[in-house]
Image 1 (tube, rainbow, N blue to C red):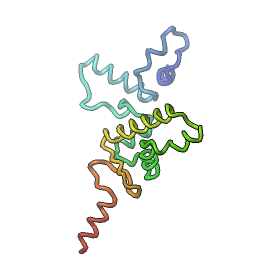
Image 2: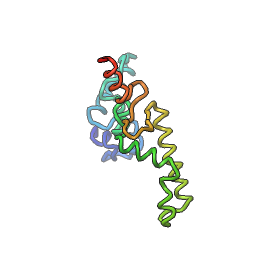
Image 3: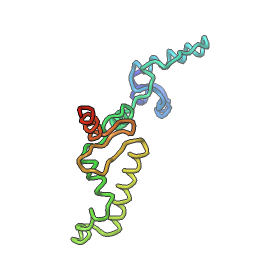
Length: 154
């Protein structure tokens, strides 16, 4: 039964709708701890100051982990390509060759601009200089770090 609850599967011998299990943890340990914590709360009106680790929601998206840890989200090449796609000149050859319509190019340009804006909203800087790596607002860029190191030696 615990396994079925964790897998959000039908429990044999019951007519319980598996969609009711959506809020439960996805591991057997998590399900057991969930009902342990719930029982303690109902019987004794006692709660943990912090949720047990097995009950904390986990993101399955590696991108979310990178954002939370302020890790690099884009390589320099990806950053340069995204910035290039925000310019109409990126699409001119494909439009002239008939590979893309102007409407498709405008849609792609809008999409690239929105992606760039999303990165900037979360505090991720995409410098225009092709040799610079993207970085978080609270960090300094690699080139600035090099300049500061060099200045300190003079």
